Amino acid sequence: MKTIIFTKQAAKDLDALATDEKAFVTAGLTDYAVTGRGDVKALVGRDGFRLRVGAYRVIFDEDATTILAIYVGRRQTATYKRK
Image 1 (cartoon, helix red, strand yellow):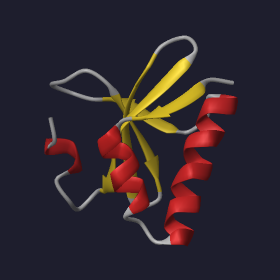
Image 2 (cartoon, helix red, strand yellow):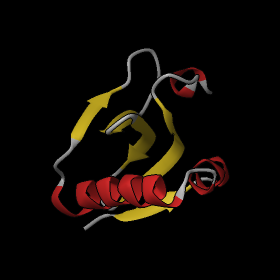
Image 3 (tube, helix red, strand yellow):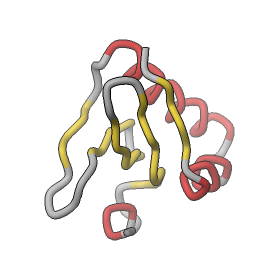
Image 4 (tube, one colour):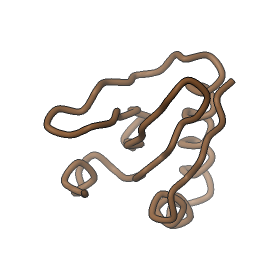
C-alpha cells in the first residue's frame, strides 16, 4: 500500500465536496493506493497522472511508496488547467 499525501490545495478541494462525494473520491484514491487498480492516465503536457473517480478527477504524482494528491475537482471545471 502506498501512503497518500494531500497538498494544501487538494485538502481544500476535498473538504469543499459534499460528505458522500468526499467519501466516494477518498475510497477511489484509497483503492488505487492499495491495489494499483483504477482509471489512471499520464497527463499530456505536464508531469503527473490523473485518477478518474466518477465525475471527479484527482491530479497526482507518485513514486514507489507515496501518492501526492495535487488537485481534486470535477472534470467540467478547470481541474486540468491548474498549475
